[in-house]
Structures are given as structure tokens and as C-alpha cells.
Length: 149
Image (cartoon, rainbow, N blue to C red):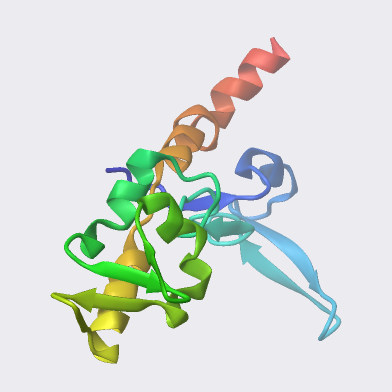
């Protein structure tokens, strides 16, 4: 599994043109009306920007198997109707609080339901992030050289 999690919205290669002290740039804080230095390695990005998570409509079957694995052996009901497949779990994940989750025909406790939700929320499919890092984030110098020459 990849550990690429932080992706810059503006590639660092572009920010470097404005740097002082090698890795910092000045930004203007509009609230306090002051300039301050920001490190380009730690700023101007989003954590897990490209991650695939529960409830996203772009999930594929393999993604759903990983995301909802912890629900194996449970029956999931939403609005009195049994959800029968992973696509339905994903479609109604935004209504998780309204789900009734049963084990052996008995409703599970709120505590156990929260534990299951935490397990689901912890799963992040990083395929897009890994490819982005391999192709762009980590190789901007190569991309730039290919464009320039």
C-alpha cells in the first residue's frame, strides 16, 4: 500500500520560483493584513485529496469489498428494507445513522455500530493518489524538463 497522502494543489515546482530560503514563500494573511512566511512542503496541499472513500459514487466493486469488509456477516436495513449488495451500502452510506444493523436477527448496540462506522471511515483507497504521485507530484522536474527541451 502506498503512503502518498498529501498532494499539493499547486505543484512545488511552480512555487519554487517565488521562494526565499529555498523552501519558503511569503503569503498575505487577509484577515490580519500581514505577510508571513510559509514552507511550501507543508502548505498548499490537501491530505488524501484523491482518496476513494465510503459513499463516493466512483467506487468500483473491488473498492467496495475493501471498504465494507467489516460488515460481512451482518444484515443492514435502511428504511425497513434489507440492503442486499455493496452498491446499496455505498448508495445509502450518507444515511448510516439511520441504518439498522443486525447480527443473528438482533440489533447491534450503538457502540458497536459506531465501531463499524469508524472501521469503514478508516478505509481509504489510494490508487489515484499513488498514480498521481508517481506520474506528477514526485516527478515534476522530469515533466518540466520534457516540456522545456
